Length: 538
Image (cartoon, one colour):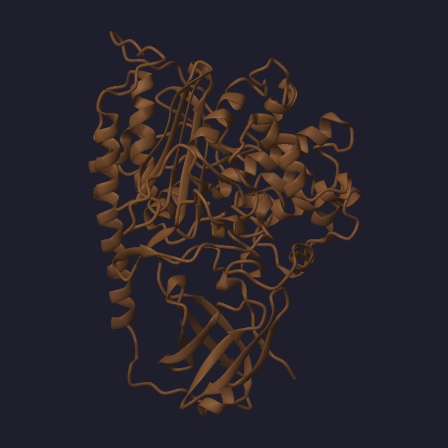
């Protein structure tokens, strides 16, 4: 879901981390176009755009891109580049579908806004007014958490908390995932800190269904997607498996970009389930830039809803970005309702990124100059979408030329080197000659975690294997690391999420508990192994 949502995006996650945490109130900037320069006319694309897109795709190994640009209410470009699937000639075009992942979140925010307009909902009413069964671990937070709080990442849950309930795809239903949130300890006090989550958007979907009798998918399809005219878009993760004009997801596995299985669970569609095209994203951007007005003059949503959705609610620390990204240095950073809100070269910017297995995307618009851009890709390179988004944005701002490709290539290389150093240090500090305290058979057994449920460790040949009972993909072999710590190597190598499993013993030498955490700093944050506390089932 950035999974949502967002997998294996080393650079993307590193930059996102710089943008996290509470901040001082925003400071608005003055204006934008450097003295003596004039912004280009609406129809004027960068003269070298096609060549530039090709350079981005080559630099960051992206098979296919769907690019949308809108300006002054007009679609300047809706175009596909590259191929849908490596090794096959089928081209990406303006009607090729890509998973847009967490760029879905603003659709969920607008859907709730429509119910507010109808008087069925209030932004600042408690969630339990509409879902009496809903609970978080703190009774005070349960009582005070509002509809607005579901969307702004300030509930007190930690980063990605609860994502293992649905990521990788689990057998839990959407309602079961929501009910299990009551057993996840809060990481911070209520409304005191920003921590990105996906699971509360799932709860927002449950609110929509409770009030309308329609699933999130049916409501958003009828009330938003069809009215905007997004005729090729769909609303389920599982639609990535459909036949037709669909981009195949790709990811770097063991140093080589290759085809990967798409994420196909529909539990968290309200957080990241939409599949869209260049043509449809252009239509959506024009509605957003028109503050909710449709091309025929009618309104999809009201001006007031637009103001609610685009208001900065959760402030965040203003980061100091690397020198290579100097033009991106923000003066304020925060989150609205399904949107990141910041500034770029003196203009207020509304944007979001999205990441799923094999798909990443970025959508950005600047209301002041009536400009928007969307980049959808079928490879997990945040560097690619940023290098393209900011090149196009600079063109419409009349900004000085800047080599975004070179900047992001430098950052990607630096991050890869840092990850390699971290892994080398871990290996060097390992007490390789140490032995487990107990015979391997003593570690085997059934374990349970309060919020996830049951996990089984069993003997497999001469070793041990771990199995998450509700997550079919999480089956792996335990390899002794040191002392009473093992590494679980998942048999599905596309997961890229091997994890340490560390056991603690009681004074009588039996297993007291086990904890887990990811081995690699590249592991997607939705593998929230660190939040598990496994205890033997007695």
